[in-house]
Image 1 (cartoon, rainbow, N blue to C red):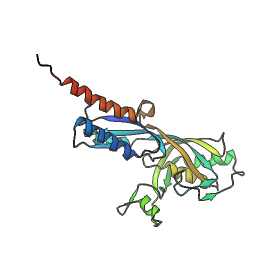
Image 2 (cartoon, rainbow, N blue to C red):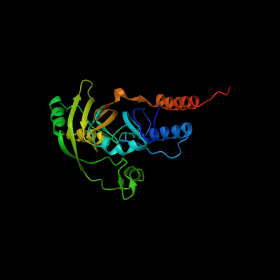
Image 3 (cartoon, rainbow, N blue to C red):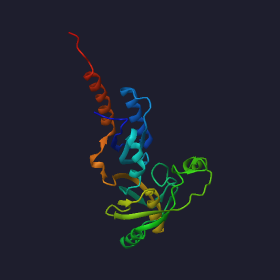
Image 4 (tube, rainbow, N blue to C red):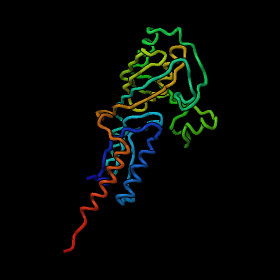
Length: 241
């Protein structure tokens, strides 16, 4: 039995190509349609880009008051990057805009670059991001080729592991604070090597103590919500003798 108004916390394994808002809107619309709850707060605790997968926390009803607390917790990401090229979006959502040689990059150079990002660092968000500037999202300016100043901000990288076995493809794992852009970290890592890098995959595996291992498939949750409505309706049926 779900208690949507009192508050539910759903751990979702967000699929590829879905926005976080897509997932929220799906849950809200299914609850509205099958449970008849017309006004219900539904929100998520931390955006994932469409090309990222993994843990997304969706809250309903009174539990939406806990969203800020969930967002403030440390997060863990795994993914891959490709050295030797950059894109405007810092990932594969856009075509490459520059290429760089990688033959000169050594394991020692990558290790030094990796260590330089540990701890408190100043990071500039990607211009293709959802940060609001004077009432508009940064990506709206970028798509219109308008230049806007994105300010650097302080973030914390607790851990940053890399595996260059498949060089120039680099596997990584990052444990970081709220507000960290992994795309920016990848882009800056490439710059630190006097080369370039773009993110080729990303998966969020942890938010605080919440793990993607305990997350639901989004379509399975949709069906659970539908089935629970049918169960409630059947339990309210009476048989006249």
